[in-house]
Structures are given as structure tokens and as C-alpha cells.
Amino acid sequence: MDPLLAFVPADIHSSHLHQPGLDAYERALYGAISGDASSVLPVCNSWEDQLWTHINALFESHVDASLLSAQEGRYWSRGSAQKSVGPPPGASDANDPLLGSAAKGVSVRQELESIFDRVATADKVEIAAAARDPFHVSQTYLIVNKVDELLVTFADRIEQHAVEMDNE
Image (cartoon, rainbow, N blue to C red; front, side, top):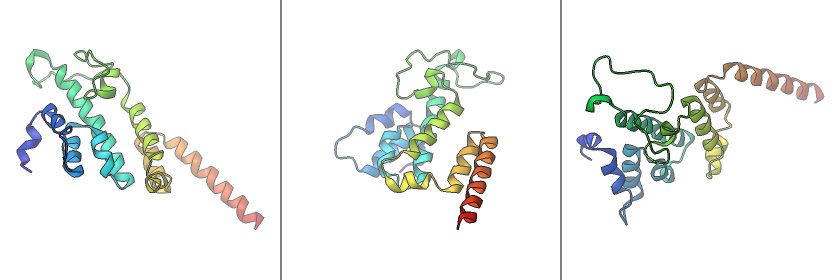
């Protein structure tokens, strides 16, 4: 694959997604470049793969929304970056799959929580089980900035384990 393909607009990549007879991994490659999670998920075999796929789609939707709302016809100019408070000003179609949650004004934290919930309920049993792994649970709480809840959960589980050990 030509490394310059990464600089080709995402809509060109997404047009490749619907070609009949396209290999699942090639479809996943175009899906990853264009931020189309549904094209990548069929080849994901781990919790990390699925998580990366969803977060990549989130990232790409925010990049696309930012590019659509760029002022003065430029993508960036010194001093032009502003912290987004609500939906991007140029995003008019909240149903556009390329914009996803970025066009709907959903906070990144809410979207990350939703991503972790989707991965935890994945169709593949081994991925859903991996989401319950203590290290993955810890990563989830840390990423969505719920450290207090993580510590409470740890304390509850330690207390529960201690009670179970006393009963034996």
C-alpha cells in the first residue's frame, strides 16, 4: 500500500468500502483510514483491536468535523484553533456517518464511555470476556477519568473477597 494513500481524502477511501469482492482486510484498511468502524470490526479479534477501531472512528469523525468547519477555507492557520464548546459550526448534518458524534455535540468522554460499553457487549464472546479483565477494567476507568469509582470498585471487591475467605 502506498504510504501517500493516507493523504487521500477519506471519502475516496469510503467509496472503496462498497466494492464487491473486496478482501475483508483490504476493506478494513480503507475503513480504518476513513474512520468507518463497521468495515474494520469484522477482522478485530481482540479487545484492543475493537477499542482501537472505535476510538479511531471517533478521532476521524472529529478531524472531519474540524476540517468541514475550517474558517477562511484553510485547515489551520496560526491562532485559528479554538476550543470547541458545542457542535462544530460547519457541521449541519448530524446523521452524516463521517461526522458521527462530533456533529451531534456529544462530549468525547460520553463517546468514550459508549465505546467501552459497546466493546464490553461485543458479539465475540472472547472480546466481551476480555473487557471484564481487571486490567482492562482499570484502563477503562482511567481513560474515562473515573478514578474515584475505580478505587471504590477495588475496595468493594477486596471486602467481598475477604468475606468469602472468612466463610471458607
